[in-house]
Image (tube, rainbow, N blue to C red):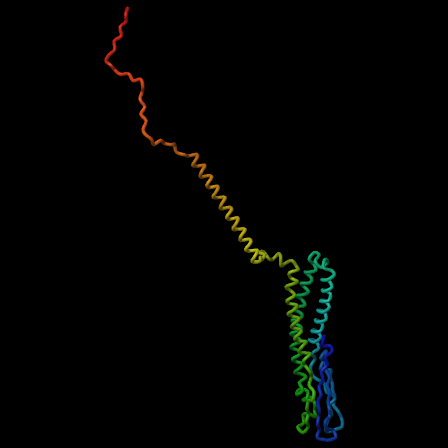
Length: 267
């Protein structure tokens, strides 16, 4: 981490009333882990030929070390995960244990990045307050006198420390976003998706198949109804009637009555 190699420096110039002790420079160095109460410097006393030893105020090592520790372990885990993804993909997917462990670890690191980044941002603000040149000048006894002029010729550079805090929150975004991709590998995503999404072309093709099947079923029903109607008409057809000229049937051998008939028996 960049915090481990950052060292800031104060540079003050103390101008005493005595010309022999004018333009006395004071240099103060501090850096990681930012235990400012252990940072000491020597400041001259204008009224005597001696110096006093002073210390800065504040201990900000816990937040800084927590932030660096999370960054180091996250780097090591990312390196290990990359090796597993490339060379041990089959073992990673076996029994779904690899994705589950990866998912849990990713969630933990996301939370740790968020906590450490917030703590470091707050601590960095406190460090800036504790190392404010105006605040440091108040610690020097000679600078409290009005006739002595104390000026800061070099102030600490905060650009790298600010960059570290920004990169901490960038890592929060990256690890939280990685949760979604690891979650898809666990298998929970597939079991939780009851209705799988389909593309527009797939929806149109399915709608066309449903329409065709509906038309076929409708046509078959119409044919079946027509056949049943024809059968019913054939089974219950009315008798045919002949509407031509009426036919009159007369009996040929008519017996016409010509009076009473007498039969004589001859003996």
